Image (cartoon, rainbow, N blue to C red; front, side, top):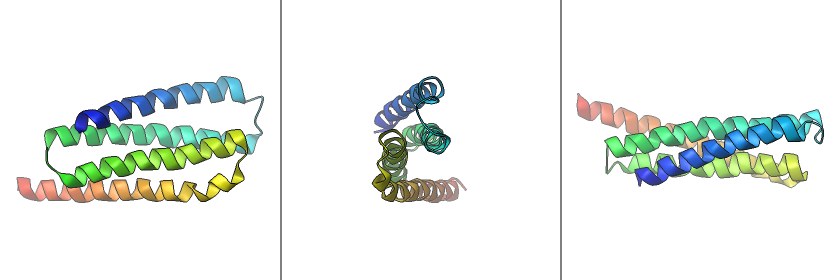
Amino acid sequence: MHRSFLFLAALAALLAVAFGAFGAHGLSSHLDETRLAIYRTAVDYQMWHALGLGLIGLLVDRFPGQWLLLWAGWLMLVGILLFSGSLYLLSLAGWSWMGIVTPFGGTAFMAAWLVLAIAARRLAERQS
């Protein structure tokens, strides 16, 4: 499972770099400042959470069988898809109704970090 998270983290980071470059070089003349800022937010959150997903993948490898780490990984992935994905569609396609999806992605991100914190606390308690 950890290899899947590592693969997905690397893929998400690769796409964040590609989307960031596309936004910086290809979209600046096609989107207004508001939509460009939304696009940049999508790229930023995708990259940070790709790194978080990679961290989770490494932790799953180090501490196999920790179901909380698996939950954190899946929540992180869902957050990337819903949060960044909805912002990409909102900024590029102008689908304002996608704004209703974005908070679900943000909630998934927060839940992933919370579950990761709980898992880390439990692992620390076991180590003491």
